[in-house]
Amino acid sequence: MNILEAIERRHSVRRYEDRDIEPEKIRALQQLVNECNHDTGMHIQMVVNDPKAFDSRWVHYGRFSGVRNYFVIAGKKSKKLEEKGGYYGERLVLETQMMGLNTCWVALTYRKNPEVYNLAEGEKVVCVIAFGYGKTQGVSHKIKPRAEVMECDDMPPEWFTRGVDAALLAPTALNQQKFRFILCNGNKVRLRKGFGFWTKVDLGIVKYHFEVAAGKENFEWTQ
Image (tube, rainbow, N blue to C red; front, side):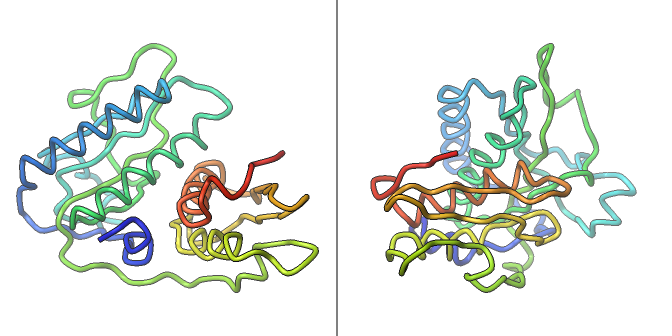
């Protein structure tokens, strides 16, 4: 499975099998976590085999079960932390999908457990990402028409529509897809977020999907 196939096949999964993840996959994921932290200065952490992690009434409300493994997306408080968390968290999600595992972004439905992960002064948790072997592969979410989330003056180039289509497959809070891609000056792309819960994290997630499918060599981000 390549990363574009992972984008197409990835669906949110909340119910997991009682099955250990192979050591080689855990090592590969830890290496990726280390790379993300090195590149960004974030403090992303991976927790493995913590059966009490999602043991709370909020988890039952969110219909999670069997969660033992998760990424803690955390870092020093800043205006860009949520967007960076979404961007690098989705990188972890897609790499995990390519290993044959399943994932789910989790905002308010997990139990914070300082005994299994740690935060330095001035850091905070943005969210967590559950992962493991899902009991199902999940289901597709409703997708807005491409025209509702893109804007350009002329016929858009193929790389732009590829990127937008990939962004529409990205997970967003409550599946609201509150974003808009604007093409200007040939190869400049502006990404605007809407208003609502978790939209900064969503911005990072959809930005990663767009870059993967459009090709970073084909465009430049602009404000």
